[in-house]
Amino acid sequence: MKLELLSSADYEFLSSIVDEWWGNRPVRHLLQRLFLEHFGSSSYKLVEGDAIVAFLVGFRSQSQPQIAYVHFVGVHPEWRKQGLARQLYLRFFSQMTALGCTECQSITSPLNRTSIAFHTGMGFELLAGDGEVDGIPVHLHHAGEGQHRVVFRKPLD
Ligand SMILES: CC(C)(COP(=O)(O)OP(=O)(O)OC[C@H]1O[C@@H](n2cnc3c(N)ncnc32)[C@H](O)[C@@H]1OP(=O)(O)O)[C@@H](O)C(=O)NCCC(=O)NCCS
View 1: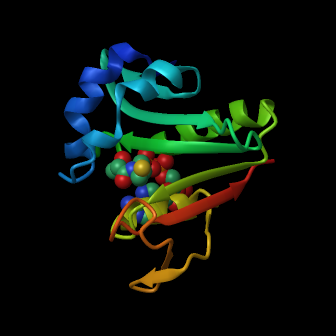
View 2: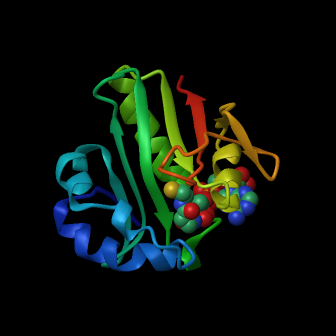
């Protein structure tokens, strides 16, 4: 399996599969071409043969350069629980640490229990917010009215 940078050329494929990989949740609108055009140097894919089986879209914050941010991470349903997302995160952490970042952040929906389990398993903490959903701390209306989000944080070595 090859680890490569993402580029704009990957947009059509990723846009066509993200909703399915996210359990038929409508997330396609969150993965815009601009992320691949402008953050391709810190975004990765794992390729088996000619097929993308996992990807991560991340970048260094421009306004808070000590923070690295992961916008998307997804693994083909048939390739899950084999350490692929961990591999992508570790590559990203390594690149961001070399740039001087001291922490990584990400967000997810409180309904996405797999994402919460994954991030917890990767050593992220859930930041206290201003509300709770089913006992999970959330930042209320973080992504718009009624769109509460879990905010993750992990210090980088
Ligand atoms: C979340 C996701 C990216 C995890 O990918 P993955 O390659 O299966 O994860 P890994 O195998 O690298 O797992 C790393 C750790 O996360 C945890 N983990 C991953 N999936 C888990 C699950 N379904 N339940 C519980 N813990 C889980 C484990 O601690 C695991 O470590 P371990 O294997 O040593 O036990 C994948 O399930 C996915 O693509 N989901 C749909 C998209 C999504 O929700 N993305 C995240 C929000 S942006």
